[in-house]
Image (cartoon, rainbow, N blue to C red; front, side, top):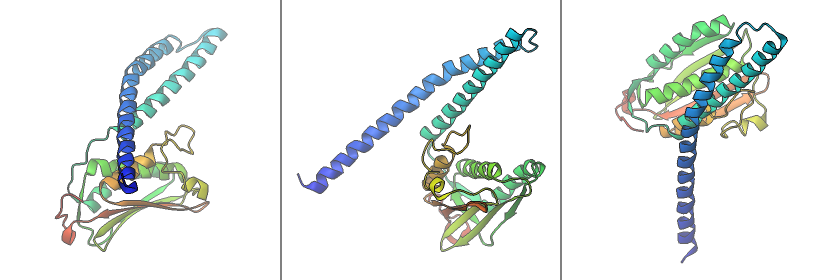
Length: 248
């Protein structure tokens, strides 16, 4: 057997094993989710009994139960994000008016950020038109980036969303004036389960990248400590700016 053929066969075996492992882990997470939900529900009921602790012992018990209940909620969040990452449905592409959809997202999140002292603005590019996209998936990716930008940006800062069209592609940029990232962090932010947040799951940015790649695009990051970060989602555009092709 020639070396290239043997390497191709081994590569296929590795891919099959990884697929099987992913299916196994997703099934495991699904099975764990139900008993974990039961535990969380019962902890909430027990906490109701200690809503107004009277003795020092009751206060200690309430504090410990609250700690356990918070950890259960954190595990539930990890499981839900893992299942969303591992079992995401195949994208269903339609022709989307990108600027209009992004404007709606910005309008929805702007009041919350304004209350935090953060300015959120949208700069729609000319001739962006309609693009082939699964908007549910793409919107979730954009919202994830907005949440990350919010967490990184102090009061008085800015978050900018913009679009441009060039050479048959549309680029969506989410830029913040937040804390920025060191080169070491930038090198790892797309790794599953890597997170700089204490309560982070580390699946947000890998999910964003997967969504972009499912759309036939690329996701890039530019960041500088103390100045902020910019994520750029470069996606195939429809022919003639009208989203004429429904699949990338």
